[in-house]
Image 1 (cartoon, rainbow, N blue to C red):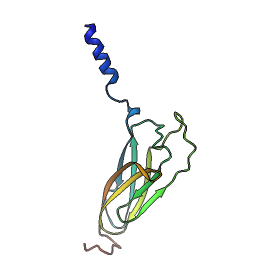
Image 2: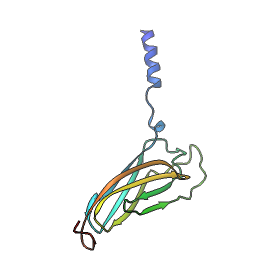
Image 3: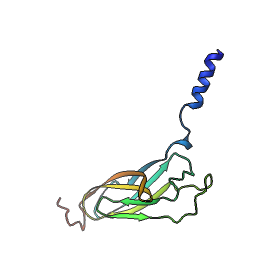
Image 4: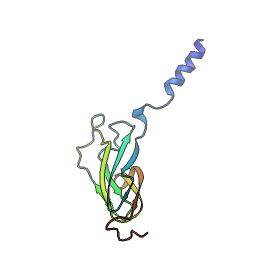
Length: 137
């Protein structure tokens, strides 16, 4: 029995990562996902997993690419990073108004010095409505 227990304990000690050791994951959701133009869409990016003080994700620049040849960016002004003390932001929200019909891929990116450190995307479908120049599409 003692011989079998030791390998089992070793296997448990080295199996799997804790939540804090995993790399953060990004999920992106739009509301609404479909509408008539012009439509205002609110998009939220949530970061789950990983340590709260992950240096790579701390004070990252945010880029939203809306799929209609427009972008929004935001560079945070943060205090210097301190391991075990500094925490990164886990939720980002932005809105965008689509004025023409089409299917759009919304891209969310976190960047450090022009290097993408995390990304996610979602889709939005817009149908022609009032004021849409191409509503007969």
